[in-house]
Each structure stands twice: as C-alpha cells, then as structure tokens.
Length: 398
Image 1 (tube, rainbow, N blue to C red):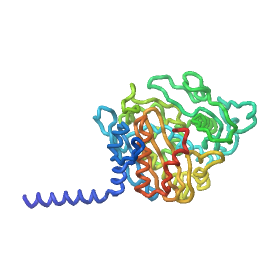
Image 2 (image 1 turned 30 degrees about the horizontal axis):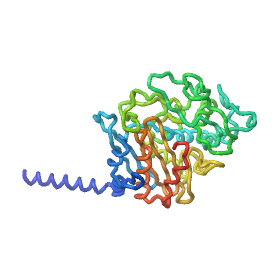
Image 3 (image 1 turned 180 degrees about the vertical axis):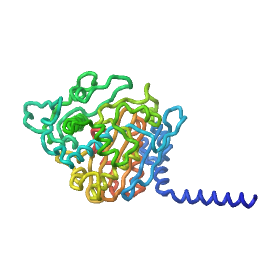
Image 4 (image 1 turned 180 degrees about the horizontal axis):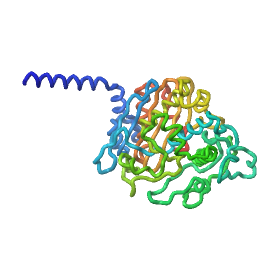
C-alpha cells in the first residue's frame, strides 16, 4: 500500500508538472506586469492589483497568436456577492464592439451583391429617411461612409434603457420619437468630408439591412456571422434572453458598485446591442485576419477584407474599425463602452496576433488598455511602442 501511495503521488506530481509546463510563460508574464499610470508614474502591477486599483470587479480576456486563439483568462465574480466566479463563457455587453460585427454583416451582404457599398442608401430605406440640410440635399450617403464614421450623421452613442422600460422600435430610435430617449439622427456634415463618430449611422445601416433583405438584423447576424464563426455565446437579441442571464456579469459603476438593476437594455443592436465573450470576439478577429490574408473559405472576400482594414477618405476608420500602421505594424482596433461595461479589441492581420479584453465597470477602459499594453510588450506586437497613440484613433469612444 505504501509503494502504491508513493506511485500515485509521483504520478500526480508528473501530471501537475506537465500541466504547468503546458502554460505559455508569456501568459504569466503578461498578467503580472500590467503598466498602470499612478500620479504620472508607471507602476507595474499584477492583474489583481490593477483590478483593485481601478475598482473593476471582473475581467475576461482572449489572446490571439499565429492566427488562432492562444489562451483565455477570466477572473472575478458575476455579482458583488462573490458567490459565483465568472468563466470564459460569461457574457459581457460589448458596447461599441457591436459595431464591427454589425459592419461585417453589411460587408458580407455586399459580397453577396445584396447591398451596395457605394450607392445612396436613402432610396433603399423603408419607413424613414435621412434628413438633409438644403446644401447637402443632393449628396448621397453611402454604406461605406456609414461604417467608416464619415457619413456626416450625428448621434454619437446611446445610453440604453432600464429593464422593464418600454423599448423603441428602430424607426422610433432614428426619428427620436418616444419611447426613444435620444434626439433624431440627422445629417450635420457633408457626407464623406470628415470623421464624425456616429452610432446613429450604424442604426441607419441596421435599417438598410432590414429594408433590403426584408428580414431582420438579429436573425441575419446570427445566420451570416455568429453561427458560421461558431460565436456560440453571442447574441444581438435584446433584452438578453432569460436562459442566458445566469452567466451574464452584472454592470457596475466607476467605483465597482452595482446598478439598481442588473444592466441596461440596448435595442440599438448594430451600434451597441451585442452580448458576447472575449473568446467569441477573438474568433471574429481571427476571421477578419484570415480574410485579409486570403485564406480559403474566409468569411468575406480578400478584396473586401483589404478595404475593411484600409483607412477610408478623411477618416481614421476602415470599414468598421479604426486602422493604423502598414506592413507588420498594420493593426485594427475598436473600443466598446456601454453603461457598466468597457472593452478593447485589437488585431494584427500580417502577424496573426491580437487580443480582446472585456470588463464590467464604467472604470474598466483604462484597465483594459493597460492589459493590452502588457500583452503588446510581452508578445512583441509590431508597434514600435506607438500602440498607445493609436488608441486615440477612436476618439468618439473616449
């Protein structure tokens, strides 16, 4: 019996050693060297220390290396009661990380010759039309401009609604009519003339998709994007279906305190309505990278993928992302902010690298950003130390 126990102990030790050896040491390094700026000085913290400093209750992330998901990590609890820890399947609100997923749906429909990329969308819209000042009356607004933040439309973002509040229809949102709590979406700049962050423009895109396909955005997003990419823990359905609420993390304010309700409801699907996980958004990011590289059976054609990751005229955006750099330094990124949730996504299409970080706090943007900086250094992303400057390309989310 004694020798049997010794043998079992040795076997267990070998299993533990092999398990430890299977962990990429860069993972440990990245999570223990978060560069946090405190009173103007950079202080290196562990992830837990950084979470405590920023008062962020829960963090989930996914790292991409060599064109595939390399590893994931989640820490924290679903609620302040700390009874149930989050895991890699825990849902977060994506905020404006919804936008590039929605944009990919529109681009895929362009690939299928269902939507026009460079024609006036106004004649195609049903139940609503873009209000134009007289001086811009004959100027078209195109899908390319809608997804690249150069349409000239206003309404930067949406705050959402408390659970139980009556939700507006898409046309009510665009018209600014009750129960919508936002002003109407209207044209304020010459289309294509400049960058202007517009969540309203993405809602116009949603109406365009509904109008042309005679279907609805949420169903098409599932059929054309979420299902093909195996984004099994993602949905644009609002409110969040009851069967998914058990593993959705609660929203918190900048002090890490919960709201008076679990989270706000965002019927602005294309602009801010996605519930998802970093793992699923990493799958999405890899799909963009592979399409750009011209991989077989990619989600969209290589030609359109290159346009997605090319800055458009008079804007720092491609088609759905902010874009910066060239060659190995080319990278695309997006911030996501809803009430109680903050996140970041970044991808490098030449080197096949990237990451997604999501938090459940109004104070989570800085933490997510610092985690990205740590990953960039640890994984030697090709940025020449300029990644931080590149985040300023998304000022509408600042």
